[in-house]
Each structure stands twice: as C-alpha cells, then as structure tokens.
Amino acid sequence: MQELITEGIITRDCLERAKLIQKKRGGTLGEILVEMGAVDVNKFVSFVKKYTGQ
Image (cartoon, rainbow, N blue to C red; front, side, top):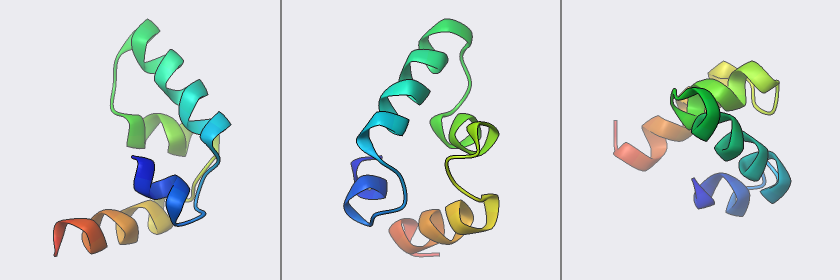
C-alpha cells in the first residue's frame, strides 16, 4: 500500500486511518480506503491492475 502514497493517490495519514479501521473491524485496506472516500474505486482498480500486471 506504500505505493499508493508514492503514486500520490492517498496520503500517509489516510493509510494510517485505514489501518486503524482495519484493526478494529477487519476488511481489506482497499475496501476501507474506498469507503472512506480516500480513493475512487475505479482509480483503485487501475492501481491494482498496474501493480499486479493485469
């Protein structure tokens, strides 16, 4: 997920908040970031495709 920060998609603060939420209730960081409004779902999907080679 550090790559999201490096790419300028989210801030370090957003990632830290998402991690806290994940600890409390579970779920994936991607889902949580989208729910928080930190990243658009389409942008996140494009990011994942880029980093997984799909």
